Image (cartoon, rainbow, N blue to C red):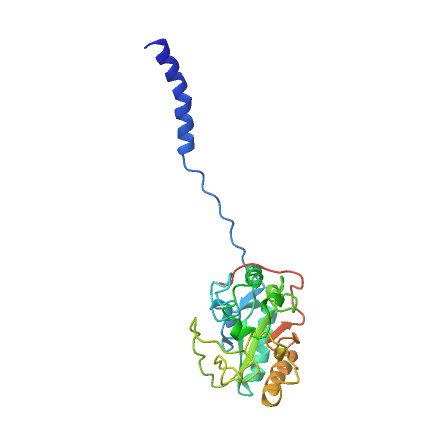
Length: 262
């Protein structure tokens, strides 16, 4: 071998080694394990299987028009004290010929973040005609309809309504179907097997205020029945939303969880 060949071979060996290292696959990144619910959380169906569940954010029939991040299963999760208090309210209502129905329970922080991102996208108004027909989307934060934190993420808040027994099924929403304002008469707006509360669920309108004086007669009586029963079981109503209740003695007052609903 010539002196030049030997030199070239000596130079080639480190280069070959370097190329081999570069071509080797990178070590697999370890995915962060998803947070798990603490032991204080339960599935509502394990505490009271008679309470109906129509988990709207698992579906596309909500104000965003898409399945919300963090909802892996259409199930209601709550802290055990909240679930047991809801069970006590259900026992009272069953004797009167009604059942509770929940639309949303524990809500992970990632779902709240999804709401915030949607609200900032002013071009996405696909569900406006039903859920916020009279509210400019640019005002959703200012008017308090969307916020960066939700009591739902603490696990003791739920969105709930009343259904007269025997409960009839609610037909599924068909994406793209014509939308009707959430404050339209009950026989006109999207069908729901709940009693008439004066507006549909998640209606961004002052008519949704629990004691709005424009809601009268049977509709007002329905709201007051829900309110008095849940308050008797230890819940507090959010006065701007007839459907929104929080356990008065909630166990996690300052903790906002982010484990997915599954």
